[in-house]
Amino acid sequence: MRSAGAVFEQRACDELQRAGLILITRNYTTRHGELDLIMRHGDTTVFVEVRHRLRATHGDAANSVTASKQAKLIRAAELWLAAHPQQAQRPCRFDVVSYDGPADDARMTWWRGAFEAL
Image (tube, rainbow, N blue to C red; front, top):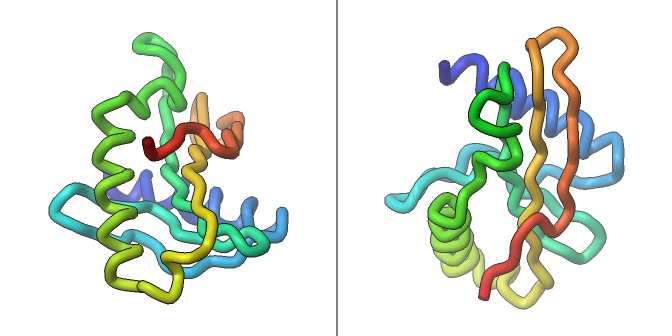
């Protein structure tokens, strides 16, 4: 399962880089969970969650980023920012890149500013 996730993370990273984002780091792991991709878009630090769903029986991939998952991502981002104080002054946002369908022709959707840290 991890290898499938890595394939979609790389695919998302490639697509976002083509759109002008710059990769800072990937798979930043904390006790609260993992940040798949941390990128820069202009002056903004972007925390990217990558999701894939083969079938929509439980909703699409983007819907799998629940309020509980969002809270974990926000806590992980806070820890990353605390460890990188020079980045803490920049604006931040949380994006979700979702892929729905079989791997070979999964449809990508990029949700910029998918949720906010309150």
